[in-house]
Length: 456
Image 1: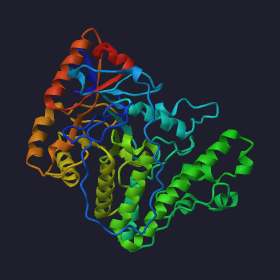
Image 2: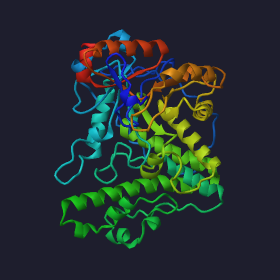
Image 3: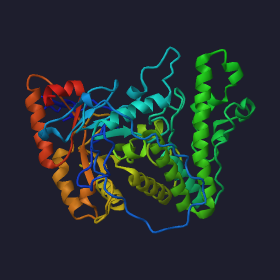
Image 4: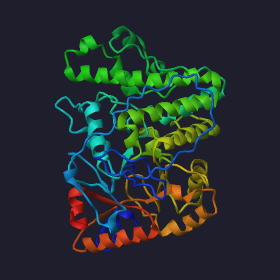
């Protein structure tokens, strides 16, 4: 039965897009006390301490921590204890929200409506709203895993802290393993029209890395000629700023080549993590749950650049695995990590998830949790069957695996939406079922709609 048709006592399952959901960690050690106006964050635990090592020779990312903003505590709500595991949807404006719940944010919503030129407001303004929202809640799930699937739009917005795509790290590791010289993107000074217009192709612009035809086209336009069109002028500057940011991160991996593939992966991972801190802040990063699509479908890999691979390019499995493990582990040092998506009907996908978990959260380890998106069959766009019927068998497999269960949060997808005359009964039944299973209850409701069921 298709998930879109799955109705249980006033609940409809499905109807949401992929990567828009995930909840908080369980069983970790408490974090340092937050600022006075901020509810206590998701318990992050203490990351493993690695032995002292010589400092890296590659350039460190220029982190600009914005800190924790002041918030209006008078608008914060408190969900009753039976519903404290429910996850809701966040969106603008920044207003009433449940301080003890985890929310899922949507990148397009937080950018705001485009103006008459088709442009979004500056990334600094959008980032401030993300931080305001997050500072008032228990946790925030965000999609931040590819060039055009992150908070900053690289063309239609002045970027605050553009993230280098994780697949670039896999490419850099593969090039290094082959013994070839890694070439960073060609990124002149932003106003150097001659330098930007001289490069003749996207492949030449991006060097060893996956080219973006859109970024190349927008950046190549002459600023002098673009002044006749404010929209073109802004898109050109934004695209150039984005390529400059990508180039700086890639250059760190170029420098790291002399130390080998592991150093290349570490350099790329550090720049990705640094962009997270610049965007959200170190303290709030403990509440942010960035999603990686580790197991993308064809559309996501081909059209959206998700995953650690590159569509149409053969990368050695050991290069992809090394890059993935290092990038994921580095992000786990700063806060929780979301990984999707695994069909628990398929033994192969169960084993794929377990293999990853054994690397990231081995038994006896301490630190932030991994949120694992699981389902019972999904099209990757919110339609399919829930994972709940398959959880007992998966839990049995986890029990015999080298996985620290206290650092794992299982999120069953798709989400549900209470509807009809039995909506409250259906909502309560779902909340009780998920609570008994020890998993979050992912619900397609914003704060205003949820107050009908939660009160406050």
